[in-house]
Length: 256
Image (cartoon, rainbow, N blue to C red; front, side):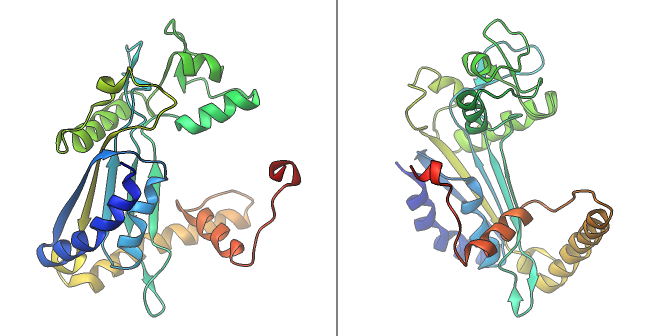
């Protein structure tokens, strides 16, 4: 069923087991996942100080690359969250990323087709196996993994983690499903407690985390001053969330 309630129901036990043992795993079977995957890991870092990873497979939309001609893997997103130090404890803005293992998210390609836009030349092949910048042809053919063979490896990894442990469908096994219907696959969430798994505990771990991320942020500030765009993953979302606290505008055309 809808996996968000299942994920929320399992979070408390996942946290309890991770803090007791150092590492814990939550498996969700028959997952219909309509949400962004970062939501499954962000609270584990922000509220509980855990490092968290999530993996979810989907229907077959992505070809094996190089050489593949037909959809074999899902877009297979993965998400990662790492706690950061805040003023009075844990920061409510941890380091988070959420990305598909395909060159483009399925939704982005669908929007490009709707709006008559082109897609990057390495994002899809048409039904004849030729690279295409036409999103309609790409949707009829197959999407491509990010970074060529490296993305293929990650797509296979997500299939194995999300579907093998849960016994749910691999992407190719669901290839005949109606593409308009929700996916029904597996999800794996891994939670790691730095307090138990780091020499020096959580404080030492957070010191190391901040050493790296603050260095990146300092370079990002210098880049911005020089007119270049550079930021950590999720920082744009944090900024948008802060702006939305005071309300936000909706375009009249969209509202209509």
